[in-house]
Amino acid sequence: MKHLGTRSEAVFATLLTAAVLAMLPATAFAGDAAWLPKLSRGQGDACVADTDWMRRNHMTALMHQRDDTVRDGMRDKRFSLKGCVDCHAVEGADGKPVTAASPRHFCRSCHDFAAVRMDCFECHASRPDTKTGATGGLLPARPPFIDTAFRAQETGRPKQ
Amino acid sequence: MSCGSKGDKACGSGHGCACKTSARADDFDASRRAFLRGSAATAITTLAVGVTLYSFSAAPAAARAPGDKVNPKTRWGLLIDASKCGDGCNACVTACQTENGWGDTGHPETDAQWIRKLTVRNPKNGASFSLPMMCQHCADAPCVDVCPTGASFKRADGIVLVDKHTCIGCRYCMMACPYKARSFVHEPVTDQKPHAPRGKGTVESCTLCVHRVDEGRLPACVEACSDTAGGAMLFGDLNDPTSEISKRVATYRTMRIRADLGTNPGVYYRNI
Image 1 (spheres, chains in turn yellow, orange):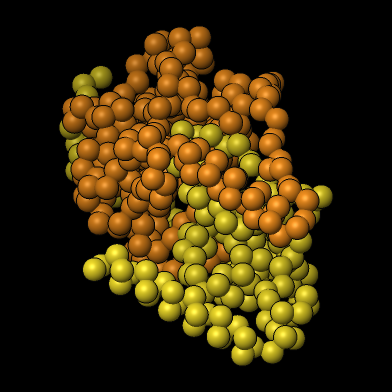
Image 2 (cartoon, each protein chain N blue to C red):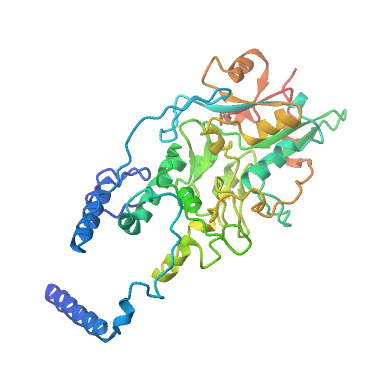
């Protein structure tokens, strides 16, 4: 029963999709459709892998590389997130690369379109390191202070 | 950690799993799709697998290609001479902040602190000395023992790190660390350094500048101390008997802080 139900649901879904597609105006499929995300091409001649492959598997590649890098120190640049960010940087109005806060950001422009939330940039830098900016809210260093707990431990110093 | 592939045999270790099976299947799907679309079937560009040897002339780290795993025979450590550490000097702390992008955000109670300067004073005679305190990169690290998710881990070359991908921010490691070396990130962070990801809800600490060490460079604090301050810090491989740090540890009387706890720290101090 369950199998039959699944099959009939699939048939229904296919028919429904066909009906919806038939109702869409033909212009929706024009090559320069405005509703498609506009992605920056990135630098260089080609991506680290074929574009079709990257569209489907970039998340797996990144997930795999992250463990290799963090755990085993393998810093092969092929599938590094830093590599993506460096190559696909989009220049903003101020001349600096935009962060993921901007809808024009390479990753975000497509993820917004696909309605897939990405967590990467809660920790990772979403733009290349700009020597002039990007100091992460640094203020002057705190002065040295005496750590009372540590001082208590130090009373038992070894005999000279 | 899951690769999402059915035929994956290499999974199960918790990390470092190989996703080759699923990747191959996807290669096939992508090329078939390209063929069906009527465009020329695009072969996946396979980067030539070659061994590249990198040599670092004046570097303390052993030569290692970027794609190689860390060398488990190595154990990175520090030797800090407190007699050369200036009382008011903060060069190592400032260098660490600049390198890794942490600092004062106006919340002194909760701000992250990867390295700090301590002044230790004998209350009886007033004698004091100063020393930097950071993650001691213990061989038997309590933070690694207590971590419920395996996020707190020791790399094969002895560097103790937090894998923020799996850190749930429980802060058990902060409780376990006898050196108060770890911090919790309470505020949202923006504009991080590309080589030092930091985010709200995770624990962090000194990484011994792992990104620099992997390139064969010195940690930022050591570099700053030798450039602008007293040159109190020495970085090197404790397992290599010919390294400068090993020779000095073998020659002089050094000590490790709270060695009685048996954590076997990788940071040695002199003149404390």
